[in-house]
Image 1 (cartoon, rainbow, N blue to C red):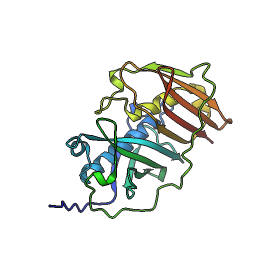
Image 2 (tube, one colour):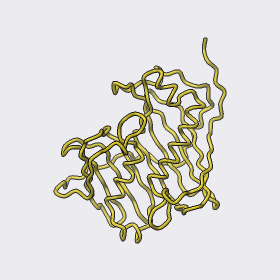
Image 3 (tube, rainbow, N blue to C red):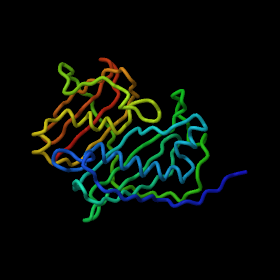
Image 4 (cartoon, rainbow, N blue to C red):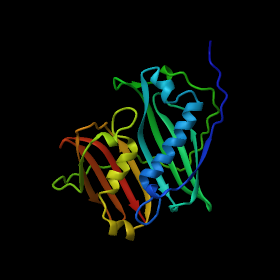
Length: 248
């Protein structure tokens, strides 16, 4: 029998920014932004019948593939924020989702993301292979964005930041949590740089998964004073993540 699921096509959650979710200037951290997005999307997925437990029964799990975040303002510690998210109709094996982060003045950030569902074996599962909810999808995106291309960083003579993956980086699926990569990316900048610059947007592409013991090196290329490319490389060879960071 076909399961009918009448659910809301948007999910909203409110949060209070805590000190460990903000940086040395008391502003929300990029990794915290992704964390709030992930929590809200996760709640909506549960209601859609596509939550962690639902997919685990099918030996599957969600993977964030790409995300673009555009920033007008960065709320500060102890501010109340609201995150709103809605999914777009899936296309073959791609699930797209929009986000808006609001503060007391209104929309402070907008984001657009692409996800996929993987088998534990690593195989991508087409949307037709997963029971989909009955949902009135919203076509309108939170932000107009289509330029997913991020160029490679050619100069790998000196890493801007390096680490070796340990257990604290892991998520439920036993690989590095996508949120953690935002910290790695912004660790490629100095305190003084981040104090002087105003973050306008950041874009992450998750290329491969990383695991305990992997050595990750992050290389940075300044395209202009306002735009930087960063590439994370595993064990001296494979690219695991690529990023573009823009400042006002």
